[in-house]
Length: 222
Image 1 (tube, helix red, strand yellow):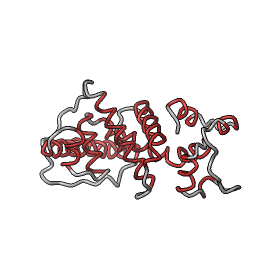
Image 2: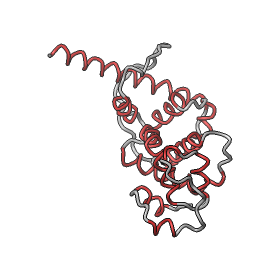
Image 3: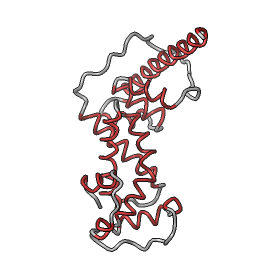
Image 4: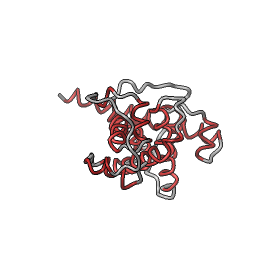
């Protein structure tokens, strides 16, 4: 297992022979001359549990980019997302022995990252939220699609949401949590979760309409 110092070493890409030798127990056997991408999850997990820093690095490298994308959706800045990512991976390595392998490893790690993001949200809950501007009160049942927009565009708009709206929107629309479960996670009522999700949709839809208008104006100016 690694603590925060050990994780910082992994984040820096360190993998000296000394660090491997310093593992608390002999590393698990690893197939020789195999690219990390060809290692099975079981092999990586077993190596990590045996204390192999190399296997810890392989686990981090395999999931870090995908988990950073998750953290960015919940965080307001890249710096904040990096903090969540590091905290999440510390939890992963500390609790890997508790992983029962009843679901994909990525799913388990993703849940840990979400929980780390929620802890960050609770720590920052006293901060002043960003201004939401003027928006209509509801969508009158309208649906809107996000598939026509680039990830970077959507990420920027989601990050601009007030924290309470951003968290609920991510949990419901992207992670698939129900409003009752969201309420339990955030300490709010199910009705409040529904209301905040509806409000988040209103704000995002309005922002997307403005983005489309700017694009149209740009085309006409050419």
